[in-house]
Image (spheres, one colour):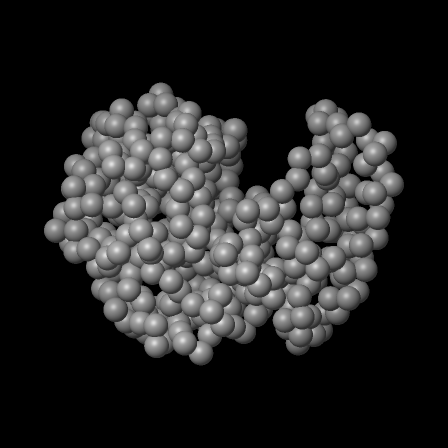
Length: 407
């Protein structure tokens, strides 16, 4: 791969400084992704609740849905107040502008990282903008998503992307959370999780009819599955035995293969995500044609459950970043070669970037094992999450490996 390999790291606005970008360059990274808007988050799980690279903020809970540039308020006045972008109250400056300049000074590619549909405060203030399950409830817990079928949501996101791409000369635009939310469940089954997945709002009903799909029929299909689980789960002992899990997944596979209504619904959801990504990407292509277009996607083995169809999305994107945060999320290191080889089948000649965790409990030894396995996989680069959360010794190991393996 040599010098052409993509070597990225994500950075949060509260950890940004000119010195931070200089350090990132010193470690050997070629790309840095700055969150230009962000979700409510604290680095306490899965992690030690300490920011290692920010002596002013060793702990930090981010603002809900703040943006880190100075938006032109006139552009958004016709939108509902819940959807208007609000500049950060804690970081009262245009971080995006300073970030791009610092990247240019340090010969680093600037990446605008844009969390797209995850938008807790707007949904909490008005569920009308959010995805809904078969009972009209939002399915997420502290992970609230906007509905991609809602015209006001699509207009809001289009205006934000338009402003960013008109105002700044960045090297890459990176879409994150461009999907439906995962369903929080500990002792359910794959089929129950799917039955409780969104979205069944009025906007989705109208869009589904255009595709010849009756969402009421889908709703009744899923309600029957939920009611079956109401009778079954109290007698299941909530098992996690290997044999039981295998049986659950076999039944789930059979249902997906045989149920035409569910299959059409899955296709419809994937199409809604494709449409909104295409709309937003078209704006960037027009205003900043030199910029690369990328997206952070779920590993391909399960991305289809969240509306991400790799085959469709790669037609729009220049690069895909798949998130395999091994140790913090208790994932097997074997997912690295498995998921990257699945992804490569869909991506063909598009860039495939592997997203790895560099924060504790990840150790330098873990980083070496994972990076070695990654280099034997069909990837075009790696990106580490995240700058602030990563201890110095982990960065020094990354720098050493970049040099030793001539990455």
